[in-house]
Image (tube, rainbow, N blue to C red; front, side):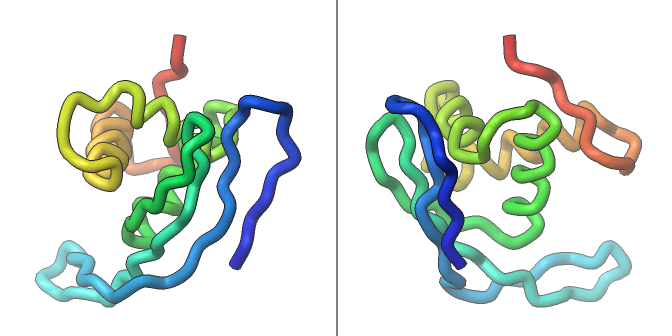
Length: 115
């Protein structure tokens, strides 16, 4: 699957993705489901990088980006710029987790807008 966005010079864009491997996701009742890990190539700050995340994180990250009114790659660039340590995939998971905690109601994403 390939996603491209028409953007102005200097903006970020997602350039492609593919399934990398399978992972396990806890269903909350003691069972586990297969969760695909998708590896996507994203241009962040004019640099192409690959990020591997489970389906659930990609889906939630897309929802957050949509709520913020930004492209997915722009949100990833913000996360990348603000991370203090660790790899980008981990920083994205932590960001999605934090947004989920802030929301706290289990309903559709309600995110804190960037200032």
